[in-house]
Amino acid sequence: MIRTNSIRILLSYKPIIRRKSDAAINIEKLEQENALANVIDEELINKEAEIEHKRNKSRLRDHDRNFLFERMPYKEPQLWTHGTLKYTRKMYGRYGEASGVNQSLCWPTKQELADKIEYEHVAYPQSILKMVEEAKIKRAEKEKRIQTRQQDIIKKMEKLEQWKKDLKNKIQKKESEALAAKESKERLVEEVRRHFGYRVDPRDDKFKEMLEKKEKEQKKAMKEAKKKAKEERMINVLLNKQVEDTNKNTKV
Image (tube, rainbow, N blue to C red; front, side):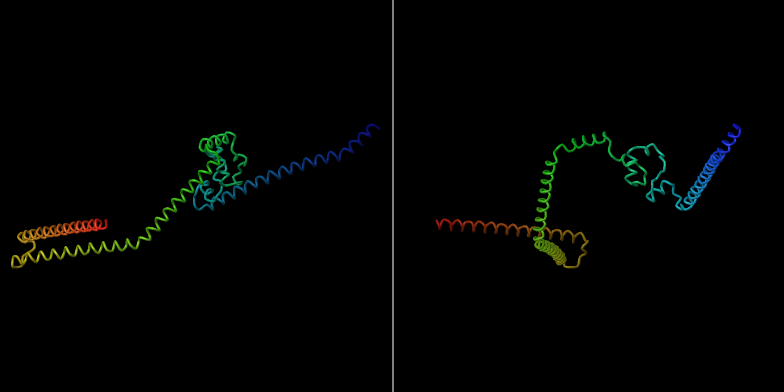
C-alpha cells in the first residue's frame, strides 16, 4: 500500500519535473539566441564601420573628420588633457548633449566660485552704484568730445570754400611768379645777345658770365625797389599817425 502511494506521488510530480526541464531548455535557447544576436550585431557594426571608412574619400583621420562634421573628435580620451574638467566643459559647450558629458560638471566648484569672488573684489573694488555712476560720467564725456568734434568739422566745412579760393589764388600766384621769372630770364638772355651784337651760344663762358652779371644787376634793382616801397609805406604810416594826432589835439 505504501509502495502504491509512493508511485502515485512520483507520478503526480512528473509534470512538474518536466516543466522545470522545459524551462531550463528555454533559458538555454534564449541565451544562445542572444549570443547569436550579439554576434550578428557586432558583425553589422563592423561592416557599417568598414563602409563608413570606405566613404571617407578625404583620407582624413577620424578625429579630424569628426571635427569637420561637428561631432565629438574622440570617443575615448587619447591624452591626459582629455580627462581634465576644462576639456570636458569645452566639449559640452561645443557639442551639447551629444558629448555625453554630465551637465553638473559645467557648474563651477566651490573653489572656483571663491576664486571668482576674490577676483571681482580685487578687479572691481567699487560698488555697482559707483561703477554705474562712473560709466555715466565717461559716457557723457565721450558724447561731449563727439559733439565738439562734429561742431569743429561743421566750422571747417563752412570755411572749405574760402580755403579752396585761397589755394587757387596761391597756385595762380606761384604760376604767375614762375612765368614772370621765365620771362625775365628770357629778357636777360636777349639783352646779353644784344650786348655782344651777334648770336652767342648760351653754353659759352662769356655768355654765362654776362648773364650772371645781368642777373645780379636785376636782383639789386629789385632789392632797391622793395626797399624804396617799404620806406614809402613807413612814411605813409607816420604821416597818417601824425594826422590822427593832430585831429585829436584839435578836438581837445
